[in-house]
Image (cartoon, rainbow, N blue to C red):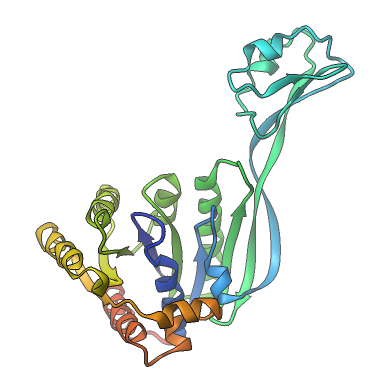
Length: 298
C-alpha cells in the first residue's frame, strides 16, 4: 500500500483541484481517499460523499468552575494568563474558547472548585464518494490541535486501506508547512507539491521543500496555472533543476476547472478534453511511475 500526499506551500494554488482529479483518475486502483485539510476541508465539496459514520474528536481539556463551591476569592482570575476567567454574579466562570487548558487555576484554587473536562474540538467522518471511501474531518472554530485531528484522519484512512487491501491512500493535505502538514505528510511514499507561478511561488515551494527534505520525503512538482505568468513558471522550473526536484508537468489556466468546481466535479471528469484535464492526466502518469503503481488494478 502506497501513500500519496498532495501539498502546497500556501493556500489557493489549486491543490484540492489536483487532488480531486487524481481521485477520478485513480479508478484503476483500489484507493482510499483522505482530506487532511481539517481547518478548511474542500475535497468533500467536489466529491459529494455520503456520510456513513461520524465521530467526535476530543482535542484537549477546558477548566470548569463549580459555582456551588466557588467563594469568589479571585485566585483563578489572577493566575489565568489567557484572560479566560471572568467574574459572574455568584461565581467565577471560564470562557471555553479562551481557555488554553493549562490547569493553573485548578492547582491554585484554595477550595478545589475547579476541574478539567475533555473538550470537543471537532469531528471526523467516514464517507463513501463516487471515487471510493473518504475519511475527512472538521475542526470547530477557534480550536487548536489540528495536527492531532489530521493524524486521526490519516490513521483511520490507513486502517481502512489495510482492511480493504487498498493499493493507495490519496491524501489532500493542508496548505503551508506547519504541524498539520507534517502530520499529513508523515509516512508518505510521495508528495506532489502544487506550485503557482507568482512572486511568492518559489518562496512557498522552497519552504515546502525544506519541510519534505527534513523528513526525507520524495517530491514531484507540478506548476498550476503555468501560462498565467510564464516567467514565473520558468523560474520555478529553474529552481527545480538547481535543487534536483522532479518536475511532473505544467497545468495551464483553464476556465473548465472553475466550471467543474462549481458543478462539484473534478475537471478530468467534467471536461476530459480540456487542456487542464490533459495536463493533469500527464501528471498522474508521472505519479503512477514514481509510486510503481502502473501495473496495479482493482
